[in-house]
Length: 370
Image (cartoon, rainbow, N blue to C red; front, side, top):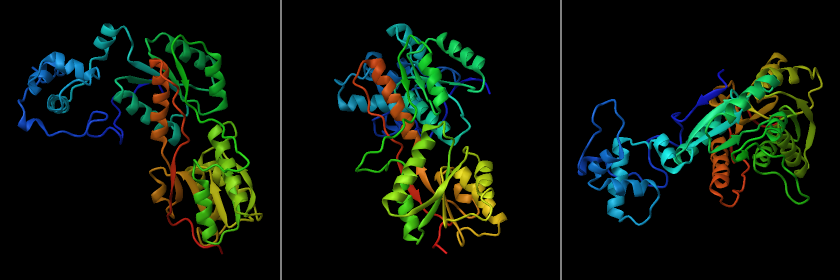
């Protein structure tokens, strides 16, 4: 995979329809003076927008720069014209005018994983809404030379700032050791610190364990993600706290690496020592592997053992049986990370980082304890 990918135009669920941020959808230009850019292959300019809206090009410019002193009726016509013509600012021209880059570099790795991929998509949508292009640079953490080359390439680009989507300890160390001349925001999930009187609720394990306890389950088994990922450590900690807080029993934590194979092998290695009626996997792929291992042992899901996952990947509803899981809002995490970097770029107070929100999705892989 090319370590540098531009995702400015990648569609996301937050961006469908092309509405401007913070503005309601306006009527189509059927009620306004219409205009189109000369030549079908030429993008519209602010002059085309101004003609369509019946205003001066200075008014369009003021709107695009966030000027608030525009009359509501005039603002509505400008918004409708921008939407109708699908106008996109010329970032190169804007950079020449303001002397400021409107490109953000995003460093990530394991982009094939569900979480990092969706965080990047959320970040791309947020950057685009703020008038920036997000360039993604992928790091191969197994190749030190590749890391050095990618970071060198990054420093050669004219960037307003850098997002470091650090999902592992090794990547965090690599970014912290690098030297950059633009603002850098570490957007990885931090290690959660439990307090004496509270349990982790951000990732939804209390709701998941409550669901299983309500079905009569009292003995649980966890398949963890790799220990070098803070997200995996947080999920294990949240699982253990939720089980202990309810006076339930954990039969242990099995090592995994996010893959279906690791979930399968972890359960298969138990032999006859499966002493739990519910398996809580740290992601959906490992839950899929665990269900296959259970079937190969002659056990049914959920008749003999209930199985749950985390993430709610698109295929989770089509597992056999469909998987009960926690749906995690990774896109919101990506948007929050961009907000944090833009606060640094603009010299604003720091933005509070968020723990990914989740909701319990109950399907057919969980049932009453045997």
